[in-house]
Amino acid sequence: MAEEQDEGRTMGTIATGVTAVVALVLAAGALIVASGPGGAASEPAPAATTTEAPTDGPESAPAEVAVELSEFAIEPTDITVAAGGSLQVSNIGSADHDLAVVDTEVATPMLAGGEDATLPLDGLEPGTYDLLCTVPGHDSSGMTGTLTVVDGDGGDATVAADEDHDPDHDVAADEDWEALDAAMAETIGQFPAETEGLGNQPLEPEEIREDGTKVFRLVAETFEWELEPGNFVEAWGYNGQVPGPMIQVDVGDDVEVIVENELPMGTDVHWHGVRVPHDQDGVAPITQDLIEPGETFTYEFTAEEPAIGMYHPHHHGQMKLPNGMFGAFIIGEVGEDIPFPSGEVGGRDVPDDIEIAQEIPMILNDAGAIGLSINGKSFPATEPIVVEQDEWIVIHYYNEGLQIHPMHLHQMPQLVFAKDGFPLDAPQWEDTVNVAPGERYSVLVHASDPGVWVLHCHILTHAERHEGMFGMVTAMIVEEAGGEDA
Ligand SMILES: [Cu+2]
Image (cartoon, rainbow, N blue to C red; front, side, top):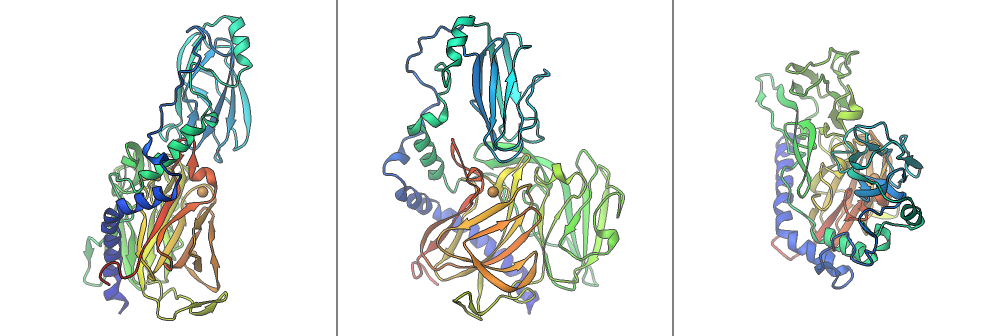
């Protein structure tokens, strides 16, 4: 019974979601824009320059410039400072960042979120230098800039040092209120934006042996990945996808996963939340030898227990996972092997015959090349969830990142029925599901109310920045029932 539904349902629901997305691009844009401040959406964001009072000569520059680090930007991006001056660097993000002048010894210490440092530039000759954050992957995610040191005259520099910003360059973003309004409207108006590549695609076995063993193939490799429109990063991943392809098998299946390593370094694959024999746990060099570049290793195990599991490297996971090496590994069927609650839960009635319209793995990441993202995409390139009114869906939140993410769905409560794939004795309703690194929460949502309802991480800097909405934001689009055929 479970078997015949298995692949059909997963493939079908994902395909339906994708085509529905295309159909709803305009509807979603229209609804979101309509609910925003009138008129602002049609104005493109003005360029971040100012024409007011450019009275200083070209050689004049402030002796001190305020610089903000965040995920993932250095603001302002192009900095001009007088020789012998300094940068006042603040990390306004939540991850650790630093600011280094490339090819010099000049760098701040690593700054935690909220920390500040003064970076003296005494040793720098006049000229132009590149800036970056040295945390691996942060430069490719956008944390680069330029520093121009000018041989200004000391008098001007001292005067300029008392000003909040350099009038020749970017107005400090938090002072340009209209630009902020326009940037937010513009980014929201782009949702859902089309990008190349889609992760989480169901992986079919390349072979089913006579004894029923399902054989899958994963290729660990690096590739270009379009994170958001026009922003291509070098991802590390599986089979050219971020997240890697979704593997779903039945309880009791014998499984082989052939892993080809085309990375520039050794790797392994850990089956997180999946019961396997010790020598299949994927922790080089403890349970196996490292899979060297060019080598292939085959994992073999029986899918003994239901699992909302994931796969990722253990070896240098701190670098590989943020860069895109993660995927969902699901054993069994939700609603059967991992049962749904029914009856009265927290004062609300849950029907005992729920049919799931869509089952969506939602994999969160927040660092490295991929950065703050849902299923390998940053808003507005995130995929909306498109459902019909009164349908029920399941979302499996996976946190493959380095930080906690409270995932907030507007309007419709989320019934948390399983944690790390284990059914909960006391399921509970939440409007914000807090997902720590390594955790999985499975939730049921009843699409009761038509409209475009935002679903986002409620650490607000994971969802918005000066340039507008980004990162861990998507929407649940509930179509009115009876609008189309049932
Ligand atoms: Cu977050």
